[in-house]
View 1 (cartoon, rainbow, N blue to C red):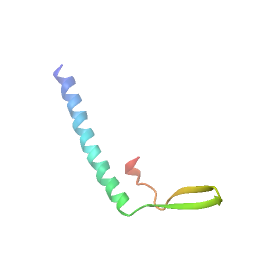
View 2: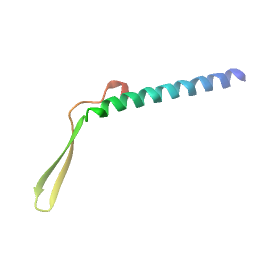
View 3: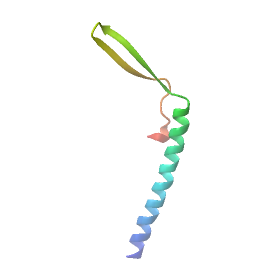
View 4: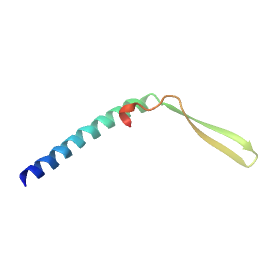
Amino acid sequence: MQRLYDAAFARHDRAKAKRREFGECWARYITGHPWDIDVRNVDPSTLEILAIMREPAPVELA
């Protein structure tokens, strides 16, 4: 039974480390403001709001 607990806690610890890595990578990515917002007037009563990605997200965030 102890082996099951040890394995569960090992997975939990690894998940904490991965969450931290993800957060650091995300922070680096958004620092450069990798997207723009564009608003277009389609007609007098309609606007389009577009999010334009200038830089794709790093594969580490997949």
